[in-house]
Image (cartoon, rainbow, N blue to C red; front, side, top):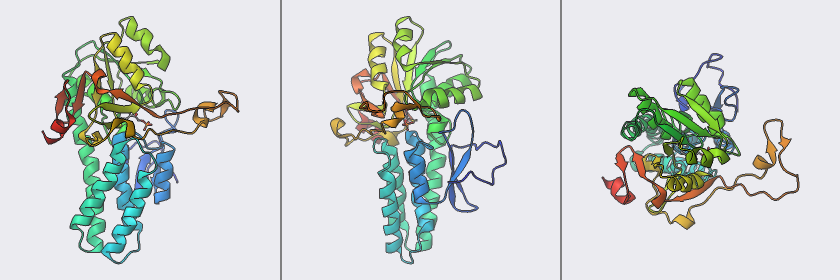
Amino acid sequence: MKQDKNMPAGAKMSRTIDWDDSDSSILMVDQTLLPGEYKIIKCKTIADVCEAILNLRIRGAPALGVCGAFAVALSATLSSAKTVEGLLKDMTVAGETIKKTRPTAINLSWGVDRVLSIAEEEGYDPKLVRDIALHEAKKMADEDVELNKKIGKHGAKLLKDGDVVLTHCNAGKMACVDWGTALGVIRSAVSDGKKITVVACETRPLNQGSRITCWELLEDKIPVHLITDSAAGFFMANGSVTKVIVGADRITQGAVFNKIGTYSLSVLAKEHDIPFYVAAPVSTFDPAGFDEAVPIEMRPEDEIRYIGKAKELNAPVGVSIKNPAFDMTPMENVSALITEKGVFCPPILIDEIIID
Ligand code: MRU
């Protein structure tokens, strides 16, 4: 995968992920390099997209959804099939390959399936299938920005001037196409003129909080304090955190699945009577999902065994390591779900939110 040559040095994309019409490829910010370097890369093949997802160059549930959608559109442009059946078969195979890369964020399969199903329903010749797939993927990217703005608008009402909001991982513009979910709520509150301070958890082992959330907030001049994950209890106990807002990778009727450490934060928030909010689009809902059956992605041991690009040893080479990427927060720990459809307080019934 190469750096995009069409972008002048230092240029930034207004979006985290986009389609390049000039050569039918996917453009994305390589998030593994932040905050040290802002580099835009190009995915020209499905293998490029899989590599980017697996290595978290692109990450965050909504961004993965749009990436899955663009990947199916990409597979359509790459396929040499001359018939609708052959083309749809190639797109389905590519979609299945993409879906397997990261199992927990339901948006990834949602993005793949949405493009596939509209192409199947409406594409009666191969050119139309290709056009429809790309049109739908672009539409999903536009929608993601609109939805995040709505989430932000609804969620901002929960924040008051002077709030100190703890967040975990990165649920900002880099996790979406733009604006963000949890950080989108904070951005909207700040746009409304409220003074909000953010406490960002580092989010070991890949440090999406320190590397990406802090970078985003500094770019936007929103005050932020970085803390280690293990300091969260200290700051909640001493009264310096007034609210917690996180994003989600999947929401079932019974639980919220999000970055490892979210569950512990929810327990701490409950203990200290601090509102614990989850901000996510309805595309993150999995109404048929059975909590214990939701796949939790186990990441490579070496993400914990070594630190940094220099791969300094953080643990003995031979030690056994367990590295779950996500955990499950029971719905009873959630004070409200913030979605594009509004703010939903307990009892939270996700089926009703979907049909609302
Ligand atoms: O492993 P990641 O970086 O993809 O995990 C991301 C998260 O856990 C986010 O909180 C979640 O996807 C919501 S992003 C709006």
